Image 1 (spheres, rainbow, N blue to C red):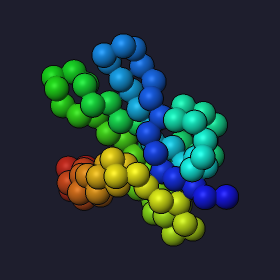
Image 2: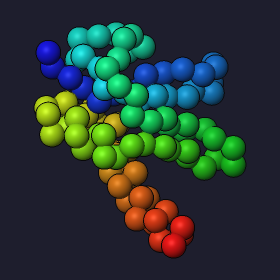
Image 3: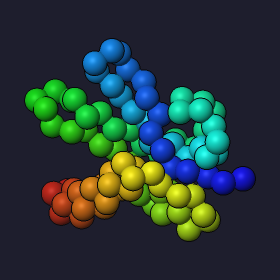
Image 4: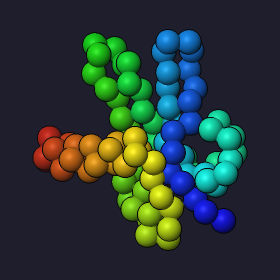
Length: 91
């Protein structure tokens, strides 16, 4: 069973909301998934991208062989970059 970390589209017309999910590679885009890792809203209020992602779980799934798509790979990198900045803001 080959797994991929990919985007699952939801939301309204011209206002997408994506789930970042782990799913079988051959499954449909919006089909069944194994685990939800986070959400991505590219058109959030104020044109600021809203991204919530459990980076630890994404790392786990990649360690057991799940391949991220190009877009989700970029989002994982962005979330890793934002995580230390958020930790500093809380401290």
